[in-house]
Length: 403
Ligand code: ADP
Ligand code: ASP
Ligand code: MG
Image (cartoon, rainbow, N blue to C red; front, side, top):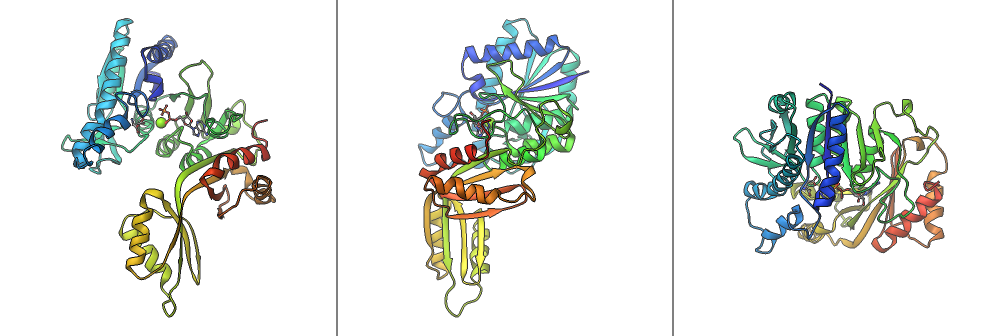
């Protein structure tokens, strides 16, 4: 059996018209001889009736006191509605299909409701329906604990469901259908001339996803990489093949070998915190980072000097972080409304002048770099949020990514 996994995201399922596009992709691949597992997200985006954010709003309105287990039962409804709506359309077209929720599809997770990890995937039931010639529609983002409780895999987790299923079924490929033409050199909502990447390796895309390119979830890429299953990220609304993510990009058509920078990504909603050591006390770093860790505040962009520490947290953790530091005697300063912009490229390792070009691009636009850091494949800069889009555009142009 040649198996293909097709995952459709929220906007791809948001209307009857959009769902008809999904059906066209399913019908085409059935004709090409594949057995198909379809993984669906909840329909639409924030504000749409059955989107995940809309379901969350139901409980936010009364203080969000729903326990995590029950919260996952609520969140799981979005994918169940989407799967049923798509199944009804397939059946009306004479295509045999069945819906399985995460547990029924054999996805066993741990008990971390809201951000569960997949422990095992038993594909027998999916395989039996595939052998019977049915399209198997699986509700993405969901799993089930040993006790049969529904769990969710964290926001954007349908991508993870898709590659985990692809790995368990040894699928030929996992196709991630979305509202853009593949993985682009930057978010097209902010950089109008961003271009689709034709073929890239797992590591680079995983890195872009971790730095904020939300077109695919980083965990999904890791799972595909371990199983060596290719991913194609492509648009539901066209027949373009989009971006191929594979372990041997250099062997695929369209590979660009001398690229230093592959893409630019961003994350907004960040606060920069600076803490000075107190005279006579030499344990500022230990105190600060132990306090953050004990209180489950995720820290990033860490610069430590003998006289103190500068680091970032998400805006939503900032007030709590500052209070905790004050409670242990420090006088931190916090600048909120910042954004992290990342320049990513496996080919920048050992290439002189990349940082110089970043500084040049931002200085030309009058943008202040508040902090920076680098690894051999990424350079990060922290800027104020209003500077984020101009910074992305300037860096994109400086590295010729629009060409
Ligand atoms: P889906 O509902 O299909 O999972 P998402 O909203 O999760 O869709 O992801 C698609 C969105 O990701 C695009 O609309 C785009 O704005 C955004 N995005 C961010 N960075 C990139 C990038 N580098 N390439 C493509 N899209 C990106
Ligand atoms: N519906 C879930 C979310 O919005 C999962 C997904 O779309 O991947 O996060
Ligand atoms: Mg998504």
